[in-house]
Length: 372
Ligand code: ADP
Ligand code: GN1
Ligand code: MG
Image (cartoon, protein in one colour):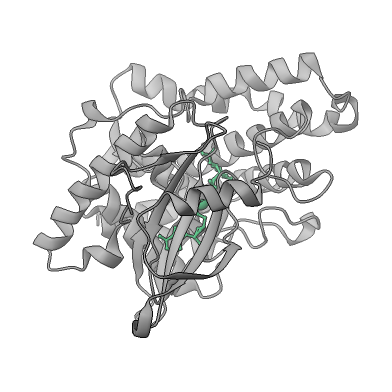
């Protein structure tokens, strides 16, 4: 995606139903996909009000209208469930601010899509686990999210990115990227390429269980990294699950696994010193406990048994996606330095190797908590 221009932002701001005087507009957050801005408005004598404005990534989300239809449906449904539970839907789910024409999005004169959300106050997202309890609370919230959506009419959801967690399809895309070698980078990353090829079987594990009818499709989030959850500054509870672009039918193990690959790592996703990267069994255990509590018995014994595999599959898949993007010239994930996607791929592979070493411990932890 081309960078957002000043003119484009101004056009978008002018087309949402905002009131007050715009005091500040600045880039916000560290997502890899959309362009997020924090706007602050001054409303008469009532003080400041903040909102989130996002340019959706139209290269990745081929049909942004369908993405927004999903989000409208899911947030309306969650609002009802939250009210039934006596919660506060203004903070516990995303709230869409409509465009001036009443739609959930605005299309600018370049044909790009924008959307806006109420800012979730007194909470923040984290790029790293700063306090283990936060990771536990995020697990409860992601488990809870999945459980709340258990009866959502899955048939009404659009598949916003085809084959998003189809690891076999991701593997084939990777193979093609290696063969094409569009940027002439393959020979310098042979070790990483071999790492992926040596573990090709990981790409088929869940596909086979699905074909045999051994694991169910559920409505899942599919992008459960720690910075996609807002943690309340006071109560430290996981108050709101955000980044709903990929809520689609998927696998419970993948939601679990994606959180582990990001949050249970002892280093940042893009750490360059690989000696710092490992999968913390303490954090893994905390997440297992929280996630199973949040799911509250809604997972089948097979799903519970396969949770460690979810961690391995998601980490392997994500590493493969980063490396694919590196080989293709970094067109998918936002990068902030030369070789950024390669650094990210390397941390993921280091984590996969570490999980392989700790496999028995991971299984043992699951056995201990599995009856929750
Ligand atoms: P991306 O798809 O690029 O990851 P996100 O929707 O996750 O975009 O938003 C990026 C970041 O912006 C989040 O990690 C979070 O910190 C912040 N954010 C997004 N929506 C809100 C919101 N409604 N209130 C407060 N912060 C938000
Ligand atoms: C992207 O949008 P964000 O930054 O929360 C990506 C995820 C990856 C993640 C890796 C739509 O998540 O699938 O796991 O980066 N989202 C999409 O950090 O591709
Ligand atoms: Mg995000």
